[in-house]
Length: 154
Image 1 (spheres, rainbow, N blue to C red):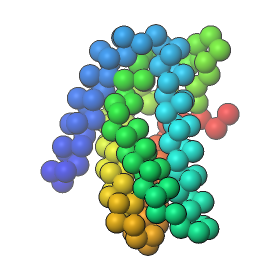
Image 2 (cartoon, rainbow, N blue to C red):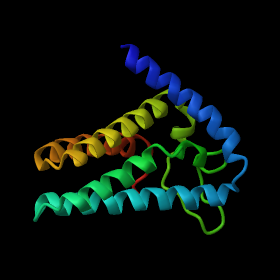
Image 3 (cartoon, rainbow, N blue to C red):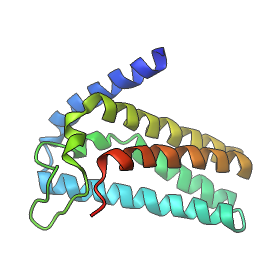
Image 4 (cartoon, helix red, strand yellow):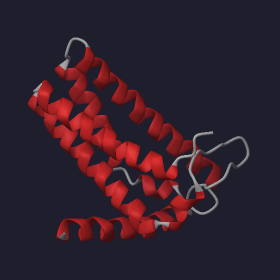
């Protein structure tokens, strides 16, 4: 229970800090950068999945898992500033406006993602494909939990 409260508090603090950090980046750039970060994460998730489904490449999995953990711990919350819940110029977004209204819930999901990403990197460090497969499933669940609530399907 204490861990959940800590994650929620951390998420709320991160969202507060994100608001000040986001003021330094134009809203259309916030959308562009966050889309790039999630595309990069997806690409690395794909590399891990391909390795798990084919010939396991421990070095590739480790590099991809470390990249995902770096993105998860990079302060992505700063890229969800005011006005970025809708398209700006040529920058479209799939985020639902509800994300901006549910800070504690979003903070918990972000904390879950960061925790799962760190666990994936740790599993990859071990070189054990079974550990990676389990951790990969966990991080996939954290992605799905956020997408189900806060990503539009259009």
